[in-house]
Length: 138
Image (cartoon, rainbow, N blue to C red; front, side):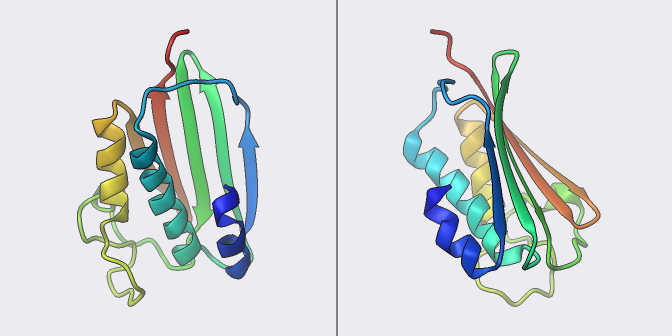
């Protein structure tokens, strides 16, 4: 999260980070997992409503590591949730910001390829991504 402090600040976003399991170990490729987090946090910086909070929560439940990122969208989310992880789809089809529209698709693919799950939820303007990975037994 330290990598994004300046970018979040530049967009007037406050990070609320809660890590409740610093000792959990998962099997994943660090570079690919970083790309997932980087894509998600880049989207947070680009598309969040300025002056709001971004929540990042990590916890372990029943042998599963959970990572949840939540933010409030600056634009109306007018695309069905299942379409947002398709290639080249953005939350607002008329959006003119930079980007290829691949971020969520790549993130989802990389998580699934490493044995995790990737779930997207929207409730009004609340955008929520949940990623889970099995915790490696010691």
